[in-house]
Length: 513
Image (cartoon, rainbow, N blue to C red; front, side, top):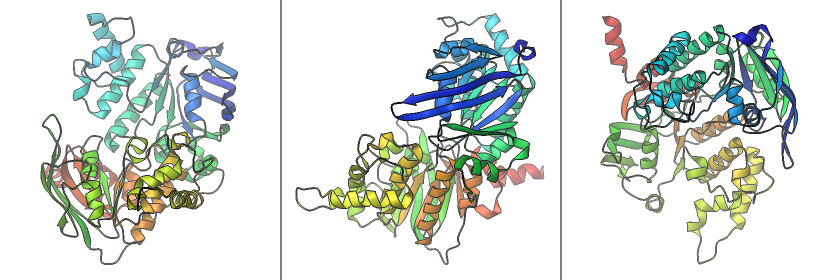
């Protein structure tokens, strides 16, 4: 890298301040990342990580402070400015055109028109070989795996000349094997002199990939530490500001009985393909059934069908041996089936973003009222109870939930569902995007329900958590079950192989050859 000889730091931020109304999102933050290093950025929800990265990528302009790139002070007024300075951000939700080929997406925006030339192909090939990126330039994005799409995103910013990469939750939906492949790419980029910033909540991955860690808390930069001199406990204490237990209990319940049984379930998509392909399993009282699988393996459709939100094409769902498949959510409630559903999209399906906590509590209970009047007092009392019990940070019960942090929104949703005293609790990615402290609060809540003999289905992304929290783990791949295993008798690598479609029988046969 040309700049490497001129300055130690690729990026240096001094006293960066960004204020939104009365909220100080970034409060005189000092921050730097060197050429040829991977720096992890850690902090609880609302600590200022996203705001700081948006300042560096040109989405926000700081109210105070200085930014230096390669030792020279710069002004970043737009994402175009950031890219011209060699800063590329890879978002958790990819910014790709699904109907385009990989090459089209890579060159998009580089000259105002799509280029397909031998020179372009050679440049992409050279970048791929330099950093160990494997991609088929002619392959359509809609046909790619999550890992392949991420590779295209990385190639896209490198093609535009980025030497500084910001990755937001890059492993959120990757298998362990895909995560290791990504880390190999990042290490190669580090060797070539790139500066890399990773935002993640997965502490084990921070310890595995980063050289240094910068911790933010309540908008302030607390400390930057060498990764080799820290462990997960120390990093958590720096984030939260107090000692935190990182142990997930897995209480054993005596003689669990089956309460929900799914038999030969098939769910077709609108295009005729199968979201769920002839699967059967059961959930028992007092157990947590973990569900693992890469994104789009049928998890969403399975949850919505069990909750009565989606139609199935075949099979049965037996609750206490009564088939509830095809009944509406209200009909399921009228049958006396107490089932709660915490959806993947908490502000799209779970809560009404413009409503406060009180009205969102009413969404679950208004049908139980008598007459034409809605009683708000019980809902308000429930909201106040949850604020105290779950330590929900909000100005009040009438504050729109869209103004709350992700962790507090999830506490509102999960708390409301739990307070309905469910027999079955279905949770889809309940800690997605949450900080470590909020995540462990959710794990405790789920274990409390387990102790109350509730059957819990937990769909998650972090395999370490699935192995610690679950009693059994069901693995889905392309709508099929590739295995249902005891969590204490399987490894993370085995789960990862099943997520790619390989069953344990397949693995045993392969090893026997």
